[in-house]
Image (cartoon, rainbow, N blue to C red; front, side, top):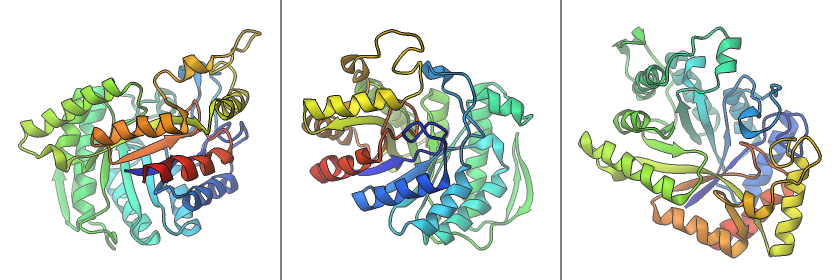
Length: 337
């Protein structure tokens, strides 16, 4: 099993501080040194924490593909992934060109995750129609097909329901052959059917119970079988919130720090009231002592997950403290290997 780190590229994501390039670069290099296999950046114009109980105010974010391009120069070994590009923000022919260039800049270290988009406020802000989920997923399916064919060197004439291309090319092509892996992120039946048809891999983020993931894995297998694809050829990854400590005392220290550095309303109410307890928090998350977390991650390996993308907090792409990056590398990743 491989391990990636979700990098803290939103305001409040690292120790509650505003997003900066220096911090993202520092954490990525620290993850590489700690033994992580990959680092990942998500794709939003801005984001708020309202759906998690936090404040509705928008938080700034570093842009995904330009950040990954800078990380190509700042790192040496780790793979660089998008989790996930919002398909509707860019034309797929442009995305193919950007992925190919990033693959060349990174000497073949790119994993391209792409999703249908879900955050309506950024659509409104950018004057992009926020179509129903089925339409967005159908558009995503066409886009991934277009991106894959262009990255493989095809001069593409394409007439779909959502996109039309007349002689599109992507030159120079990527370093990876036949192309960088294309991952599709999502959970629903239609998304899984689309991934089975056009994607190299499927990402499930963020995982709650193992039972839920197991059921969705079965649906992904069935979607492959229906079109005659060997399910083993659809690669699997999950995003998981991971909070670990050496023992109960160390866990309590790390969790208290996480609560303190997480925006109000997520783990502690805005008004004077008890914070979310450790027992409540750990439900549906990969959380516990080193041995407990190793056991939980081992169960994911048994479910044929090839990579876990670790979120070190209570919110997507949050890192409460850089010390946690080192701990996961030295205690969890090393133990599983």
